[in-house]
Length: 236
Image 1 (cartoon, rainbow, N blue to C red):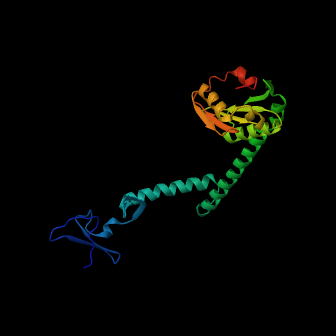
Image 2 (cartoon, helix red, strand yellow):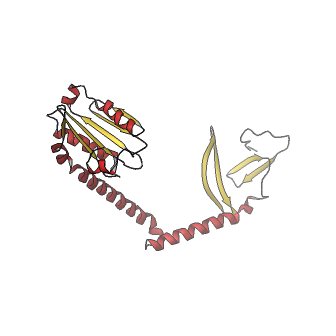
Image 3 (cartoon, one colour):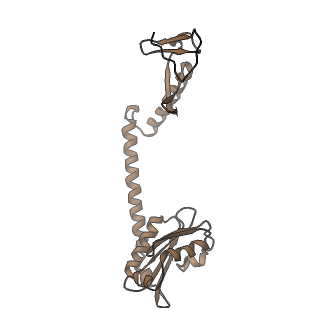
């Protein structure tokens, strides 16, 4: 009959053959219904791999499928009501909202980065001289992203490029402290390396880090060494 034995099953001399219209004809050890028509509505939930060349399809049938679709219909109706649009227009409406949200997030990131970089000039001007090396340190406001911390460190270093200088920018982007150290060529000539310096700073915060001699980043688990006083004085 051309029936297929699936999944390496072993059968006896006699075995049930299950046909579903012209779509499927297979050997089967047992089914839950006498006829495929008893299944009624079939709602496929998903499919996944369970082995090499073998896929598993999960679905609801009968009354369970109706109940599932009824819940989905209620959810779609609620979304349409909240977004003040028709059901068939929901995909386009949601896509527009997501697109505007992404644009707003990008603009917010741009404004946040610009705000962080505004203090680069004052940090460079206020750098202290430590043994002939200019040292600029700053504790950024909590929530400042690691990328913005790096941009600020590089910007301040650029303003101090003509001098031996070390720049240290610290902050807590989320719940863990981050330290970025940038070193000018003149400071590297004196043996100061960003990777070694950031390792010392991160160790004090219960973490570690490293990187290149000119720019390195580290992190920790405990921001408590940064007291409110050190934050006010812009020193980590």
